[in-house]
Length: 225
Image (cartoon, rainbow, N blue to C red; front, side, top):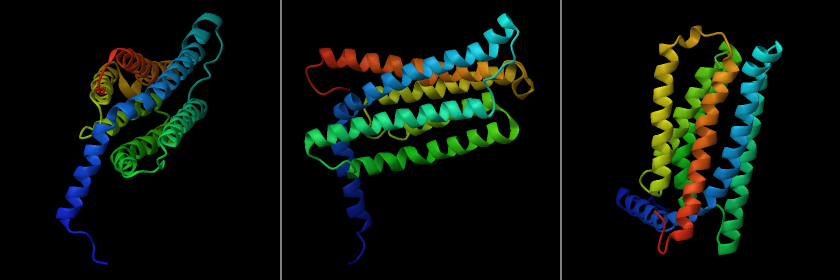
């Protein structure tokens, strides 16, 4: 069969976007519980990292122990856990609706978010493993996650766009401040600084987002925005 014409392809994309926008309240309702759980876990891991790197060394005189490979493994494990929770919620919602898990809308969303997420993930891992720059890796993760969310601007609810801008603006400000105060030349409490970056964004921002969605859901009478 002949391939679809550009006009037909454009119409199909518009149909998918319209469907996504009509169901935006469903996507937000599904993502909010995952954001709350993932954000809470990120805050706990961040606090643990700050304790290991700063408080432990300053208070007890112990050697800092939350940097390099250990830092990478813990945060990657958190990423896997949060992804599994999000996937479980998505599958449960699809089952309740009697719909397939992998829809055209999901495929479009993945095409928007996977490239920046994959790029940030690979670059961050290389920065940690090969040059021991965990603060810079954390900043890369924050900015690339913000870009991934921003990539859904054409069909995501406004709450997701606000979250994307929060990540992008905060990531840019933290990057400027980090370089202004020494950047790669900093060699003290690297794990504490990187943990604070990730706790502020992936932790606190996700918790605030989830709480705002829950509050909006309890008062809304129409489609959520």
